[in-house]
Amino acid sequence: MGGGDHCAVLGCNNDRRYPERYVIKEHVNTLRFHSCRDKKYFPLWTRLIQRMDFKVKASTTVCSNHFKYGQPYPDDLHPSLFLRGYNLPETPKRAPVKRRALDVTTPQPKKIRTLPYRSIGIQVNPDDIDDVKALENDHNYANLPFRNRPVSPVYVAHLEEELAKLTDNCGELKQNLLESKSNIDKLKLEAQAKTKQRFSIRDICHSNELIKLYTGLPSYQLFEWLFEEIKPHTKNMHYYKGKTSAEDKAYQLKNNDKPGRKRSQALEDELFMTLMKLRLNLREDDLAFRFGVSQSTVSQVISTWLPFLDRELKAFIDWPTEEDIYKYYPQCFHKYKGTVRCIIDCTEIQIERPSLAASNSQVYSQYKSRPTLKCLVGITPGGTISFISKPTGGNTSDKKIVKMTNIIDHLEPNDILMADRGFNIQELLLHKQVKLVIPPFMRTTTSTSQFTESEDTKTKTVANARIHVERAIGRLKEFSILQGPIPLTMIDLMESALVVCAAIVNLQPVLVPLTS
Image 1 (cartoon, rainbow, N blue to C red):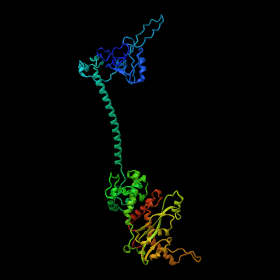
Image 2 (cartoon, one colour):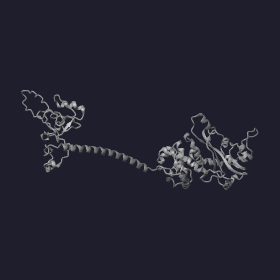
Image 3 (cartoon, one colour):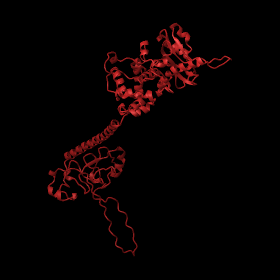
Image 4 (cartoon, rainbow, N blue to C red):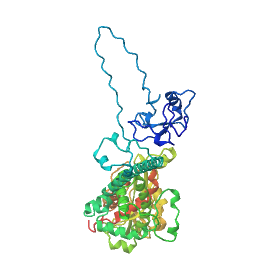
């Protein structure tokens, strides 16, 4: 006894091979044979079955009659009924309590506890039912005609197979549900990103005042013209992603369009973002929030567009010929014999303090008392910026910065160069036969330190003409990026930033009136 074909409980003769001999108790729907699913419960089942010299194995089976609900359930896994046969009581009777002689009360019979009926939801073939109408009208499942009939093992195996398939299908549906919820969340985020209003040039194209505020250009029409001029050269532009990205790509060498997916921003808005950085010097995370892109994208765009605009707009900073000078020559310069070709001055841009002492000494300006970059600016008599030098350390003197640049090579004999008192560069101009006009120096003799009347008149005349270079530099300083402080990580872009800002200043209205 104890094999897999028959019940291992002593006194139970149910056997798979003889279904016609099944004894089915009332709490059982369909008689089946169940084995212990976990080895750790083998000793427990051995104690429950209570057979001498018997041990439960994996092949041991117990029929449904001995389980509380007709089969093992998670809350009741082990057999507990009829474990000593069907004709014996389930639990030993307790010894009757001896009563006193005077107690003549008739003892009340004990209530027999009946087990609740539980249905396991097995589908039944209507062909196996004798009277279908009886099934429809009678809801007492204990009296169904197929109640005590044996069920074919093939049919039971078929039901178990169907149950396994439905269980697997349920697991797949749960997995699909989780994936669908995840996809819905992603689609919601994408929809929110698409519907999020991004700042664009189209938002301010109706107002020239806003265009001037954000870009420095006087009108939207001028912005459109500038974009159309540079647009043909952007088709094979690749974006800066480090030093290795500076090398030309194959599509650039062949002058083809840039491959890959399109940028998240329109080229118009990338130009707009770059000009906003120059004009307002906004933080990169601020620009990223306004334009709805990542901070790394903002960094790539600015690092790419500034050198690109430097190359494209450098032609707007042009050294004019003598004939070009006389096409617009204000009246305040007619007092000088010769052609005032250029008015020069220096400007300084505050930067962050370098950590190295040697580097700090090179950029520290005694005039500003802080680390700065210094560049030379030259304008025409009409106020157009005609020369701008590369930025150098703030410790460089005015005379030295003139030597470092090639501005003297642009001058011609009989030209007049106007400058401030700090530009004591007469010896540099002698070989070019160029006249230097600067305000007279204050005398330090003991007789008098005041200017004579002629010197005072000359100072005012030079100041009235030279003041326009200060106004041009003032227009440059309207670009907040040139006010500083400039982070050290952006020092390499300042040469390009100066050229782009100077080119935009030259696109603004005339600075010096013809008559003043």
